[in-house]
Image (cartoon, rainbow, N blue to C red; front, side, top):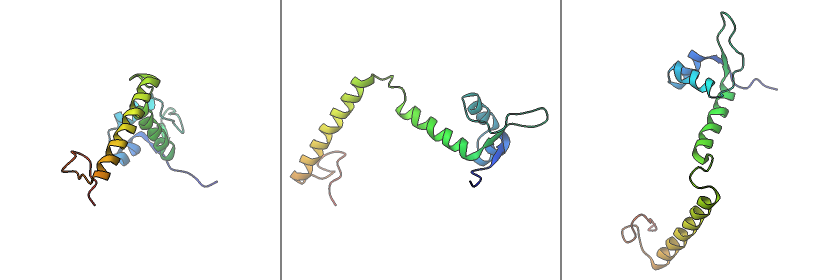
Length: 109
């Protein structure tokens, strides 16, 4: 199996991402996987691919998160509102209304 990513020190990864080493240390404290734990005289090594996967998962989790905003009921309300908006947009399109006629709807092509 080909080598995936590179093992980087906190400073190298921070430099690559243009963030402070403190940010990377905070990520490690928040659960970022460490390829090789620090030993006396040797720094933590973080695999770049594992870091990016972890970071992407974290971003997704924050975006969709635990539904603290109302759980399943909030999901149903969002779906219902989205369906209603689609119906409104389709009706506006059938009427030939443009974005100037209908606020944010951009149907004119």
